[in-house]
Length: 268
Length: 365
Ligand SMILES: Nc1ncnc2c1ncn2[C@@H]1O[C@H](COP(=O)(O)OP(=O)(O)OP(=O)(O)O)[C@@H](O)[C@H]1O
Ligand SMILES: [Mg+2]
Image 1 (cartoon, each protein chain N blue to C red):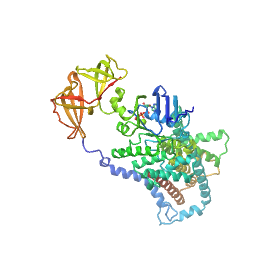
Image 2 (image 1 turned 90 degrees about the vertical axis):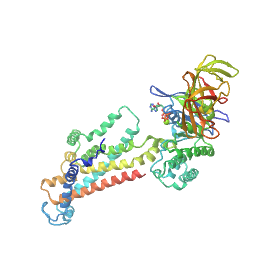
Image 3 (image 1 turned 180 degrees about the vertical axis):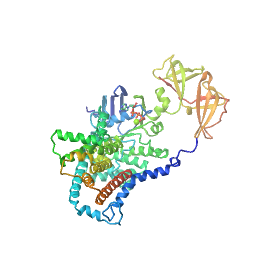
Image 4 (image 1 turned 120 degrees about the vertical axis):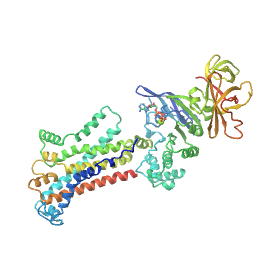
């Protein structure tokens, strides 16, 4: 046998790696840098300033963005909370419910929406709301978001639960806890990192959703993504880059929280 | 039902059967475990030890039969209504709680106030010498320390019976040996009945008041360490516990508690008779290698001559393998000391094998 195979020594490894990183991050970098541009144009650099950030909050489109942000954040918070609660109960039932007959089927049913093209879900949700005569608006967006966030919230929670051996619950029962106490005092706290991950994922997915929201929102109501899209249709202005950068910062914050939650969990 | 007897058993298992679908994991087990006893379930992997323990704890239904705890029938009660606690093999300490809260958990669940539970938990931690770690999390302790926390946690609510499923298997050899002693001490101090599961015979022999040897879902023998080691009741027990020579013999006569037998090569021997082995029976005889010794000449009419095939050095002992007439092989252990090891025979030499009084044991099957 020759030397151990080492991917780092394959010809072209370094250039390909750099290319991938550039493709992944260059657009984000450009948007971030140009959001600080002190110019009305999006291509000419005229020095650093925060004027476009101020513009987002005070400029001509400020009212529109504020309302859209309010809608987006309230929907994301409610949708993430409700879908995470449902996903927690579903994961508990699935993982702890023993080997009931339709277990595999149930698991498939919960996770399949992740693989269905979003446009199909969007059209289906729209048709569903129409057929039951549901008025489109804030609540239709909220309901749709709760529904499609459930599988996203479910995955990290179920993964976490599978790692919790039965013996913890049994130890609690053995030490005179009731089934309910074993759940609230032992299982639930052990699931918390999974629940937080699920919540953050659901929140980001909801905040970021465009296709489904656009289908079910109806006229006269916007979320941040649809509002941004609406503005961009009239030409890209630097304030769009400022909003995008703020959203990016929020995502990074969430990923960081998620990372530290899972890290602190490893220590316990 | 209530039995009124002052020597009432801690646990009475009556005709307990456990089936998983078509598979019978336990075949009609009846077993009594006395109060204040260090009782061990010993058997090879898959023989049903854990299953039996989990049935006593309440994690597994009993397919048929009954289990009594100090006279009260318990097999239908959920685990949280049985005054029995378990030390789990992986300890199952609650990772988000401190050591103190872990130990206090059972007391709190039993309805004691937080303060009282913590006070008692502190005392338990003192008993296992871990007081200085009470505010740590389980992951900040070593395996041996976690093990002691698991013990303290299970003992804190003063259960009537403590169940331990291979609690030492995750520890290294030195620690395992130290913990054997500690466990035994703890049992004596608390006076609680311990039911200990292991597949390690040395552990079983050194710690237990009584041992139940199991195999394939059946009880093979029940007795103290000496009974099981020196008077195995069947082939399985003789072979499973320790090292032994299993020799095929035919019984020529049984008289006054003694049986006259001969080996394949025609050697005549006289051994203690056992029930169920009569004249003409072809059975096995078990002789422990350390109860045989070698000599140059025959020391009596029952000395067997054999050719030395090999010597093996096993630290404390020297093990000699000998070939007898009729293709029989015998292993003899002699202590590796000035006194014990009178003479080492080289391969190819003829040596005489002598049996200590009562060393040979006939096996019914
Ligand atoms: N849930 C189950 N379903 C089906 N069979 C089972 C189940 N649990 C245990 N068994 C079977 O019952 C038998 C006894 O298992 P058990 O766990 O009691 O063995 P054990 O003596 O504790 O072995 P070990 O020393 O390996 O722990 C095994 O053959 C096992 O495969
Ligand atoms: Mg086992």
